[in-house]
Image (cartoon, rainbow, N blue to C red; front, side):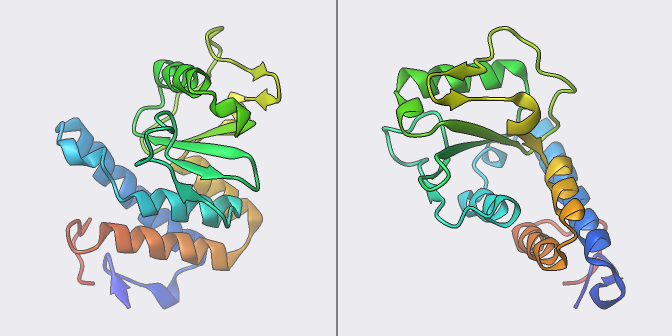
Amino acid sequence: MEYLGLNDSNQSPASRLATFVAAYKHYVTIYSNARLPDVAIFDESLARDIAEIVFGYGDLVSLYLETSFPAVDLGSQAAACAIQVTLSGSTTTIVETQEKFFAHGLDGIYSRLTFIILGEKQATYDSERIVRSRGAFAFDPDRDIYDLDDLFNILVSSADPAKMEAFADRLQRELGSSARPYGGDP
């Protein structure tokens, strides 16, 4: 199949994935810079699928629509991990999410909180307002905050072509016909 003017059979999985990660990041950046409201209401299944591919969480459920889970989007009971997907990688976003997470007692269910940033994350997160540990809860910004570049690097480091292809395919479906970056036919 040709997409973006590239023949998939002639691309390495890493190269193909890099193309779709770049296209998706560009799409999200342009959309959010224009302050178009529905960029923040992205396909919930995209975040779930990405986390499942990259981290291997097979039991992720969407928590977004449940009122008892106002601070997080996804949860894995088996990994005791909650995931918040956001456009902003600011310290303020991390702190506010953690405040809601603790206020609603989610640290009693999830000992880990992971962020997937669809935009760019900060270079460092050294604010004293970020909770690093509380009871069984542990949070390390270097380990628990990821942007799309980080997820790409994790998959490339794993050298698992099937995972790279699965991630590229998922981003390709997400971009779909509504966003044909750089021209090309599906």
